[in-house]
Image 1 (tube, protein in one colour):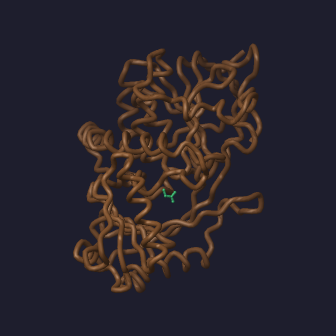
Image 2 (cartoon, rainbow, N blue to C red):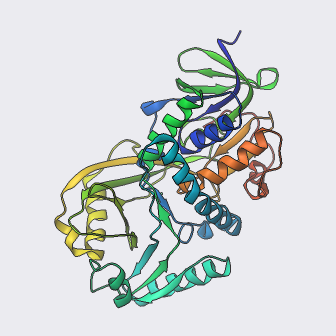
Length: 379
Ligand code: GLY
């Protein structure tokens, strides 16, 4: 017999799980979020919070890049009101900034790549323009003289993911969303498909189960959601950057209280230590940041960390249902924070039996081939 029975159980309390819980809770549904906390490496608190559809799409994977771009740009638009509403409701500042982003080049080949990216973004209806190094320095005077050109994406934005998580937690509390702190180890099959078991030996059941777990949950078939490690650091910003700067080999995100996040490495494979942060990785990021903004070379380090992005084979998220009828909202790779409001509205509609506001077919789990989502165990 199950220990507890829920109406809707969301497995995974990252930004995707929590925004979905808020959407469902606000619509009157009875929701519980089951989350392992820091017992497993998390993606959201490690993220820089860039809301950057102009730079982040899955072109290089040959996946559904137009659909991915449209998901990102829809969600970027939603963030404007989402951020304001979340702050007003909770009184928690989430450091939403929509000053745009600059992608830098130092040489012709990089300029060419950025120019091609600008053309793609404009073709998809986004805002992107190539500007000279001098024009980039007029926007951000701390940039190096070495900067030859830049892609300026005036509508890209950012938030502080840790502040967002704090605000969502307050919001969910007010909505009576139950938070259960335990690690889910397995999902039931067949007649037991409405059940799942935890590391504490409990068996839970729910009318509707949503899997929004991270990269190392082991709740998806092997190889479909896998960890892509990212190391990052924060420094005391001795120079003022007003917007996100994406330099070759490092992105720089100015945050509140004089903090500047410099990210991030990308590493994957079976031999990766998921928990360590290496001096070499941080030194590499610092060198790349210092090349773009020389005054950062001596900036004091405040913190360093690592996180695990939930990668998928084509770089696009998985939103839909598995063969057991469970709902899947996972695999947002580099863009969970960006996608969260749009993913929440679409997944809430699906869960409540409504038509989602945009086509989820490009993100359907079945795109990976028959049988990959039946049943929900593996890892
Ligand atoms: N979205 C930036 C990163 O994943 O590092």
